[in-house]
Image 1 (tube, rainbow, N blue to C red):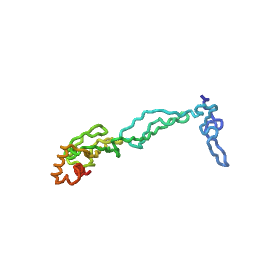
Image 2: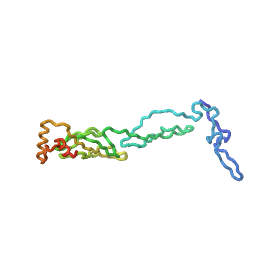
Image 3: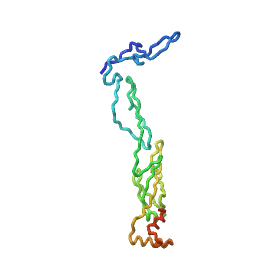
Image 4: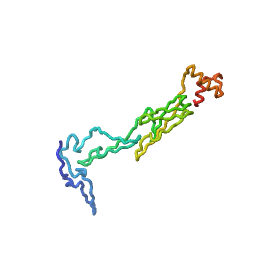
Length: 215
C-alpha cells in the first residue's frame, strides 16, 4: 500500500488557488491536488492512489413479475465505489427476455397455438391446454373454425404496477388426418352425401373435410 494522503502544500488543503486579476480575485482548481485538498506522495501501485480497483462481482438480483424486454432494475449501492471513501453508486440491470418455444407475449397478454382434431372441432370437446401456470381446461364448442381464438381471462402476465394479470389467448389449429381407414372414409362419405356433396366428383374425401374446416 502507498502512503496516506497529506494536506496539499499548493493550496493548503483548500483545493483552490486564488489569483488576482486587477481589481478581481479569481479562484481556480489547484493543479497540484486537482481540487481534493490532499495529495499522496507515494501512491499505491495497485490502485494508483485512487483507493479503489475494478473487479468482477456476481450478484443475485430479484426479478419482479411482469418485467419485459428492456426493463431496467436498480440495485442500490452495487455500482462503482465512491472516490476518497465516498458512497458507492447504484447498479442498473437491463432485462433481455428469451423467446419461449410455445408462448408469445404481447404486453401483458400471452398467445399460444393449440392443435385439435377435426372431430373435436365439429362435435365440440373439453381439452387441456398449456399456460404459464400449467395446464388449464379449455372448452371447444361444436363447429369451431380454424384459427378461432379463445380467451382464458387472468391467465396472462402479472401487471408490473398494481394487482391483476393479462389474459391468455389460444389460437386453434384444426388437424386434418393425412390418411383414413375404410370405416372413417365410409362415415365421411355418408356425411358428404347428407350435405348434398358428391365425393365421386374427382376430389378426395379429405379435400372435402379441409373445405369444411376452411383449409
